[in-house]
Length: 205
Image (cartoon, rainbow, N blue to C red):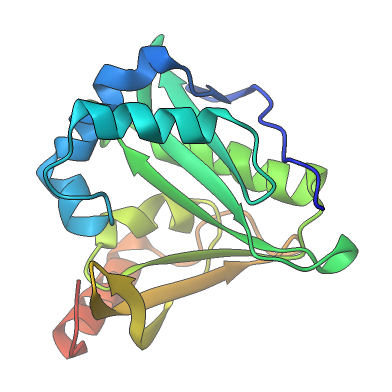
């Protein structure tokens, strides 16, 4: 049986990644009720405080499937970032990264710093051979921290993601340890290409 993945405290830039605690209950509830979070994630609609409490109880316990960090900035909960194991063993282990930002902390570079720490941990500590990022086509803002961390412009994949029972076209990008960890191309050009993907998608998010 795989050993649980530990959740170390990591600090860098403007953020600290730490294990969640029950003190995060109120801000977790706030971000799960935020309209943009509801639109782009699979958080259940009609989210309640009891749901937030159950969620925290689950992710506080170490798991062999994922590491779930609370992102702290200015001494406050600013979001959550996860590394989820994709299987494989030894040098062929891999996984994916996902995150959600509390609405009060958007647009401040918080998630860029958090992604940097999480990617470093995936490659340097866990030894993963690749890291995947996916999102519904249309969620351009979600890609920007990934772009800043070197994730290539994502491929557009039809019906990639199950979003509340509906298959949506998705973006898929893969980063490997030897790839540059800096933006590839100008954001103006990259975002324009992403918007073309949105226009051409049959099942956008």
